[in-house]
Image 1 (tube, rainbow, N blue to C red):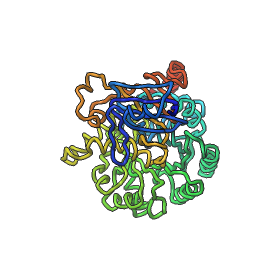
Image 2 (image 1 turned 180 degrees about the horizontal axis):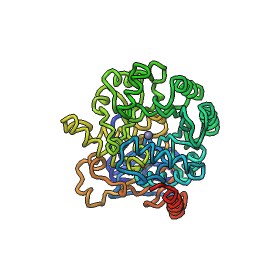
Image 3 (image 1 turned 90 degrees about the vertical axis):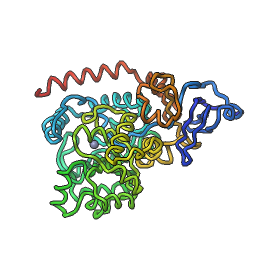
Image 4 (image 1 turned 120 degrees about the vertical axis):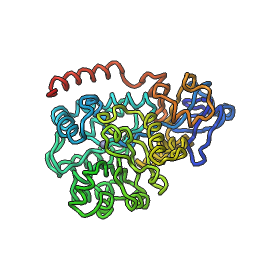
Length: 441
Ligand SMILES: [Zn+2]
């Protein structure tokens, strides 16, 4: 008999592996931060004992959800400016607020709040693009969450750098600081083809190759962007990135709303991961990404929340439900984006798209123990015929009970174990008061 650090038991264990194995009355033995064994509960009991056995009847265990595109620190700007056209929202509200408030201290405090929100929604890893990467990474680690963190690169000055060279210097030192960390993966994040010129994009690609880290970029979020890039380079954004040699399977492209068939083919051919941010796109009226067409072509489409200023929450469960329904209607095909595919997009494919396919995204032996345990004893979850359907169409973030990241219980019966929740909320209110008093509302 072997000793496990933790044994997680559940009525349903969804491995989200290649065969989409579903175990009734299953258990997961966790040892040394990793999944040591997954199987029927009685089989696990024959091999492992543990002083810490959690879960049990009325629970479901599935892999931690993956948020493949966000700007976590923007939680402090939630609800500051809503119901506005994208350009006005961004240029008259968000950028001035960022220009005024961003600092390592602000970003670090905000990221703690974002991680708390994400963990309570069953998200165990997120892919970020923002400024002050060290503050993001340190705050994320304090909460025990996993993240891929990209320090934004732009061709114009911001609070974090004055010149393109300074952005690159920041990005490089950030990658050197964090490469090899067990929870934080650094990445290179040129903001978008319209905010980074061809030389900057090529340089960003070279840096990502030099260090063997992923590249995270916004692509084709608006029609304006497509027209701008067409006007400047006589190519559409995906074609433009292809011509610069940027596209391959280390790239995560956020949005990809205004992509045509040849661009979808390119994304599939190069193995580019796409982060679909349905609720942000709906709220900013940016358009509808051709998700069903991308999936049919073999593009790895995954879920992102984008920053909360345009969402307004960090909740992949609600993205899953909304996305499936919207694309069924758009394609006039209720069989499109079925529940199993949608949960795959939110778990294993998400992990693969951000370069963590061998680390997380499924409950398989040898992978990190990033596990969500949710309660099924809820009025909206009984009776239960199809567990995938319930998770995608009926489950709420508040049904998430316990979350493990890297073998550690970071959320225990909805209470954060790694930091003081009341303190995180208080800091948010204190910063909010400052932001509001300094805002020209
Ligand atoms: Zn974004």
